[in-house]
Length: 358
Image 1 (spheres, one colour):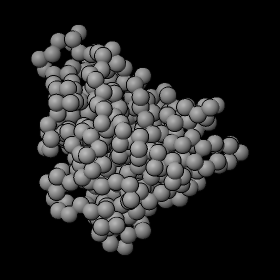
Image 2 (tube, one colour):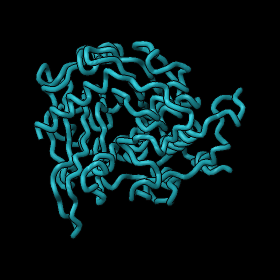
Image 3 (spheres, one colour):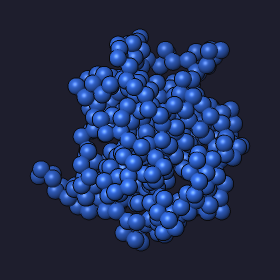
């Protein structure tokens, strides 16, 4: 596993030096490389799928002409809007917004031993990153009031783990082969910060194996894997402020082509022209913010909050910040999702009606 981990670090460092060119207008979110969360219909997690919002009902801006709004933008705004609606309501109401209505939206993966059960092995990633060379986020973290962001070896403010799906398991008579999917994530439970640094799901990595691995572990999506890690980190820390203490979720670096295209559309700039911190900020009340939440790099955060209300509390992504991180490893876009508490709306009928309107 250590050899694979070093390889992954090298791959990440190499990819950070080259930003993708502006992608063609025909790019489709469902067809783009989605390395963390499944697009509806791609994997056997139908209980999670959201209701469908007709594209023609989503307008990018009040002044926009509907015919000029690309379909991939509409798709992202649709996803983001439904996530926001699910965040605004109770767990029961959020479950009713699923494509297949449920009594609850809550995830099925809540136990802290789920990772090992499904064939993941964890590697302490502390030696392989820092906030000034591989991830230039120290300025952003300090600006958010995290006065001294340190790795575990420097003071135990942050800890970083790489969980790789690499062990064969047989569960309920079904054999699950290793896929080499992996998730590299930094956590600061004290400060309420999650930094998603690398997200390559079992579905994405398994498809590249020879022969392809098609029977995927049921625990495979970023939101479920991250929740289990977040829960076990808090459980192991006697000084934990509580699992509900979640305020900031970073996605850095943003390598996904569809996410970068949405960033360009929201900001009106090429990703290579993005400003350094603080960059630009979009409320999720507007379509730009919704689209960045509905981007491949954002949907996992939507699911994390929508499916863990009992554990994390009722929370909502209030705004999304996008900026360019510049480090020795290269320059790359970063997305920051600001999370705040929000009491569930007692009347969810309007939110469901908005999600279902035709």
